[in-house]
Length: 224
Image (cartoon, rainbow, N blue to C red; front, side, top):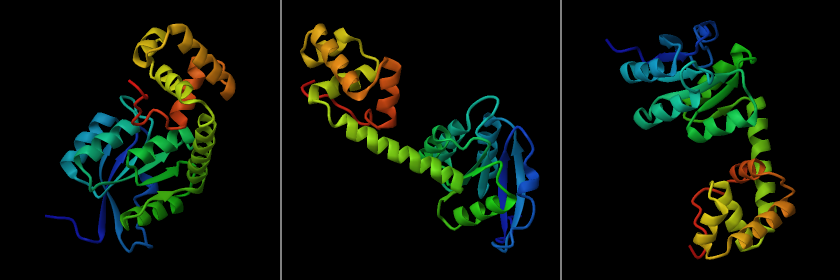
């Protein structure tokens, strides 16, 4: 027998119990929130999502066998109709940005009240995305940082940009030299010059710079 249309079927994914925050009726929706399944691991969550086809998944990011981000990607590949709200103790940009890009519909810190979670449920079931103010601040900060670093990157010469991108992808100086028809010494000169302009002192630092600025997406160096 199918669920009544006034019931929201929820799959909880958390290795700690969070059921109390969502079991109460959500009066703003005039619909009852019913937990139809609970999972404590990512693998179990994916399998239950396939079996139960819930209306909504409420997901913690910290799971014992895989990250919540991996769960989101797996569910999005197979069950595009399931709404996903992350309920996490983490609210920094390095957690918020990847899950929103992966297709999460809402993000609520565990420190928030149940009212915030119910508002998130109302919003995402209406077909929109919800960000708790703390998460929204983190996302805005990430966008501003990316814009700033893209502007910095634009001050480099074309060859400096190519060398820095290829270096960030893990290519050695000799491999970059072959790709760009340059000598290894010239590649090293371009790299050092670019790092000095950007105020970067290590390879790890410029890899992070390149990722944050979105410089590796769809990259094809000139004259390769």
